[in-house]
Image (cartoon, rainbow, N blue to C red; front, side):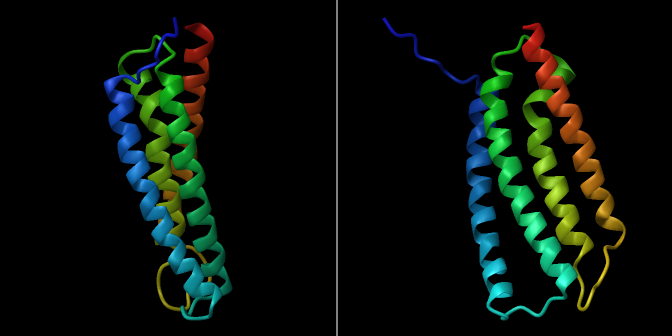
Length: 139
């Protein structure tokens, strides 16, 4: 007899939110099409940051989906459970947001202070993956 694997309520809810969030990444691709077609006036810097933000959003959301199943396989609780389960998802907001917001503005050729969001997201990503990795090794 096969045992069916069921996601925890936490993973099920966050997975639903993450899947819906991927639709926003898809629509963000329309902006990249505008850039590629020359319909959006951007600097080379802004084009690079738009691509980086879009790519990070998609990849990190997919990684956050994988983390849901993995987090259910740990025995973590409290802050470590939150970090392992939700940290990558929050990084998927911070890092792309940093790329997008730090490059906004007509003719911008270098990032503004909001680039700190990329760094904060990268730190959270590293902490989250470390927490999840340790949680899996000690489960």
